[in-house]
View (tube, rainbow, N blue to C red):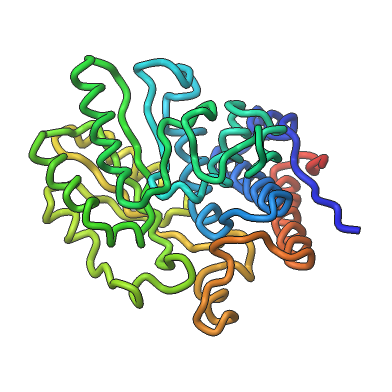
Length: 313
């Protein structure tokens, strides 16, 4: 009989409180979140794994290294604000919020259940800044939040995660030019550039071309890095903090399904004969067990390298 397992909060506290290398710690937390995301979606019977897995490293980097949100509190008006515009990556987002102590692990495993966590982010959930998932609207919402911070003389910056396929929406480009025209500089856009939208490559739907040149043409400062390399992410965010006279974009090159080999990007497309089968829906029992074992094995190897005890499920 299939057993669906998860990593409890005490294990996140143990790893987070350890004195191991910072990047090793972030990598461990991210994989622990991946495992819980996989189990939450399996238990729910539906959800979005591919885009959750491509974005988890970015979210972990933000909450555990970059944002002041946890330090100040999720209701402090001077906090940094983060939300995902694409929204359907919320299983991964919820797992990071649980790891950070913002929501309970009990709630995480009530994904898509009455009285639990919604299938797209909702402001009734602690730590969720805005409802999202209606594609193309996130930068406009973030711009409004950034304006409110300026008008209210509040601290903190706004960080909005978008999907690359989402950039095909016209409102995205309208919001870019309006942000520049209104001289709103306390906003950061992060593109989860995994190159697959739903079940097909982005370039086969509407090729986005040179995103760096496009964002720069709209007057934004642009950085680009490997979205799964915590050192590169840290360096990129450090450079963005130094830019105070432009709105900013980080194009994070990612792999859809990152962390489970048979779900990863081009490998999964090839195995699916040109279709990506891990955008939505829960994995079958065999795929769940295979994915769970792969992630857990990598966690245990990295714990051993860091001289930490294995995870207790």
